[in-house]
Image (cartoon, rainbow, N blue to C red; front, side, top):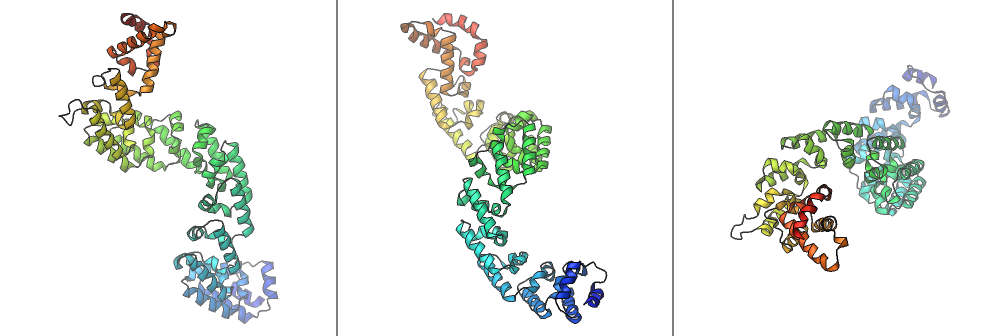
Length: 471
């Protein structure tokens, strides 16, 4: 035996353990040589055989028979060489496993690519398959996570129970089936870490794949996001970022800073940190080509995560409605809306704002002046028109009256009554007159319903002087 080993593997190192294994096998030199030549013919090099010298103890006839069987199943010589231990398996085991995998829905090509499964104990495959089915995994999901068929059933069961305790139902566990293959300690460590970061069990369940990530990656990303200005509450809403490549997050952060976004703005649009860095640059260029300035893009950063085809389609839709490039750029948020919604809102607005019912385009002026109306809900616009009409406020002369809803206008009126007309100290019979006077003041100066309360506070003294004319 020693002579045969020196002859065929003389230049390669063989461990003492393997030599003893070969010695106790009782094989003669001719058998070892015959097996060696078959292994070489299949494509195993001397280095591979030297690292796995037990291959030489296989019966040459069994090796040859299994080799032919594996060829018949579609395995190439290189694939057989990679899974050389299959040559020592019982041919019936290989055949049974092949049929079992086919029954699960694996194609011949898939089985060939997963050839190592053919050498498993058929009972293990069957037992794990039945257990996975009982846990709610479909055949298709099992095929996607084929490696589970090779796992220790106790590991699968333990992980399943832990995931169930985290409030993951069968459907969720099936979706994140790869977790059943994880080290239970890793799952527990990640769970505790995510809890420390402020994620509740419900949030962890929706981002369960994080439980299978490297704890180091989660910790590194958490620190990076904190440095960028995201608090734990914000991180929890974008928890999937914790599982992203730290390099991707860093590259995107630098890219967004270069585009003019502040850390505060990036924090408000944190989902961008998980995008493909190349796509951010590409989408930015599309927005620039449409006429948006860096400042406008920074203020509407959510557009950088939109499908560019949707943005271009919306741009063209807005052009068809008669909006200029300048107007579109000023209302860039519309580029992220549903084109059908924009079209529907436009037609609805024209019908509501029309002042000449013989002219179908009547009302277009108001819409073109206040393009932000296209993103408002029809019900809000209708209630605003009703409110303004009830109080004789001419929204056609001052379209910017649509800039706020009736609730906000009532708050401003309350402020005017309190701060300008001293409503709180008026007698009961004087209060009704004060309300009428306040509306008269607003009718003469609609800007009061357009300005913010902060702006109104700056005008308080002048407004009090003006109000004296309405008492």
